[in-house]
Length: 451
Image 1 (cartoon, one colour):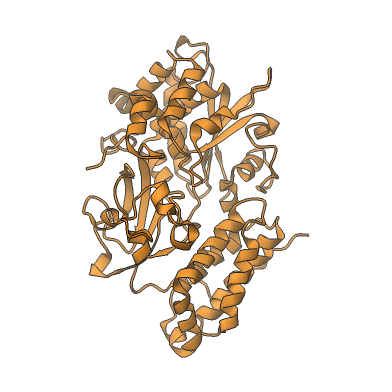
Image 2: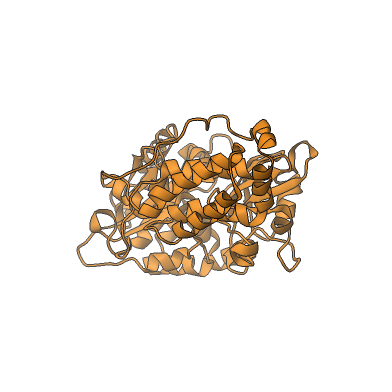
């Protein structure tokens, strides 16, 4: 049984309430942190090796150290709770069942960063969770952990919850800040980075829910002890949202020392493939990371077991590897159609493109239309090559990573499953008969354009 740091109390009845959370040791990390200096807290986070849990995996302590501190200018912490990546739902679990863990992490992080006003920006589809968070904020404030002069420390902090309107693009930190300011959620050109000019052109740190929640155990057990969990640069524990053709979908906390095979087949985690079928492919980090066939998902190119950590999943680059990403672990069994699956993802990205960058605005709906054509048995071999060319011209040519997120699934699907695309071209009648996953995708999506 793996060690649990974030979900250790999730099973306790009433843990959502302040009294129960406090009884189980909650807010003890705040008391410990206030006996430290902000620089000491920053050092603990650096020593811990904590990497951002939102997808990029950038070292959290290093990111915090970039925060500009001009005299007389307020600073802000913004929690990115816009968890819109298909296949990812672990932040939702934390906010719904352990809201005080997030609030406690925000208090410590805000104190470290010198931020007196902090925000939680939450995706519009999580319509019921803001009420849970606001109740937790009210309870923490009533107990003296928020507001003026917290615990006599001289530190003031207010936390506000801002509801988004359901735009995937607002998961990108600068688009999130634009939305938080009341503007259209378009990504900003960088530099300047948010650490220098973020919310209202003030120095701002943006981290996702899991990253900020992880600050609590780091302070409780020390950064050095946290760094001993896991392996290499993959320290601490990681929440994984497991879904797809498995027996036990759900949110699991792992210490990144287990293999992919163990995670999929052990009863402690996913419990194997549903109905005893074979594993065909897996997307380990949310819909935007490259899909891998079963042989490369279970073993690296050198034959070593593929491990559930940043380095092992990425081993070999995109040719034979993938990414930890947001931890949205999607499993596909032998009966799943890769073309239909890729088409579904492409439709999502085409719909969610903000339209600001030409390659993404024009390329994402173009890829979807070609994939739909192939899936319906109307494609040609030239279409497969055209798809490859389009994704190549989108990747790396947009302001934000949405273009990359749309291109990578298409590239990986063709790279590893080109024979399946060719089967659809060579067997149009059978492709039409199978009609994989076309329900709900019959109507063409609108082509995005700028006025």
